[in-house]
Image 1: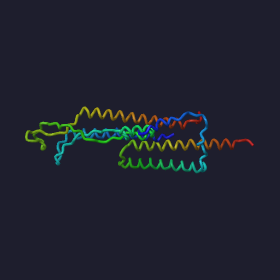
Image 2: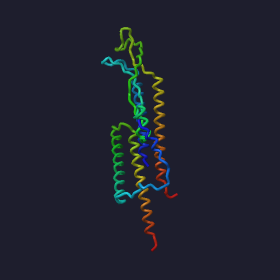
Image 3: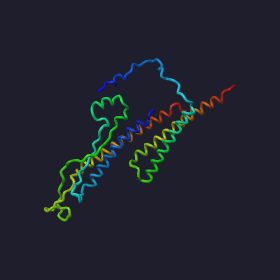
Image 4: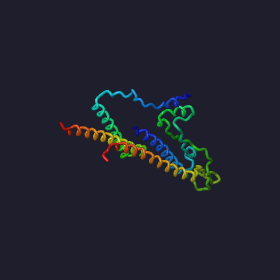
Length: 145
Length: 96
């Protein structure tokens, strides 16, 4: 019984969800940071998770491969959203009209992302615990009872 | 694109498979091998714990999973040892 492959599947899911939470935290942390010295405004990021085998033919042939060949992986990409402007003439980063450019982080979306990442992580933990319980029950076979 | 997956559904047969050959090597060698595997997993879990304590573990769940793997491996070896001892005691109790 290969319980380790079940663990690896859940671990991949947990890794993706952790990345999602990290990226959300980064977006929220940079919500109010104006342009840096290099003139670059922080762009809100998002995680795009994809299957290891993404195109159709490789997915089709993956059907006969072990399940662990189809685990998800996430990568981070920047969202192209318009910056928001805040009236703050006292800020050193303000322009001639007294407006400051801030990253267009959508607070509501970030909170929803965070919650869903948390719940998905919990689901992965439950799946892993189920796999562990199954392995332990298998070790109980033939035990004195 | 291949459709080999369909070929994987082999007809069910009740004949004993001829592939069941006795493993070469003694039981002691197998057990020794298993023990070294378990030891390796324990070492991996230990290293993960150390890294976590030092604060440079990239993710917590990896360490926890390594610990669970090590625990399950130890339990498996323990069960094998229990069965072995049971068989040995059965033989020793045999009346001549």
